[in-house]
Image (tube, rainbow, N blue to C red; front, side):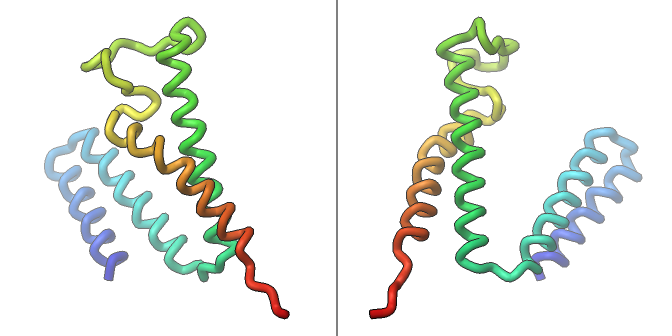
Length: 126
């Protein structure tokens, strides 16, 4: 059901492009199509604890990289210069939405600790 709704959303975005002939509408259609393909890919793979652990480790690694880059742009601006943005007093690089950057900070250790705890707590037979 979710895939069908997402496919309809992508088709609506494509029709919007035909009607308006807008470049932004094509980008929105491509994004919706990417979401649909990701949903279909991850929805068809059977989820095991090993795969879940790998996904958590990947999310933690990505969040750590994003947070490190954001910190470098503020602490060492000469090393990684950033073009001035709408609000220069807020972290807006590498993710332009500063709330999502703020949410990725607690997600990194959470995912790392959850992944580590899942691998350490394997039941053993006595």
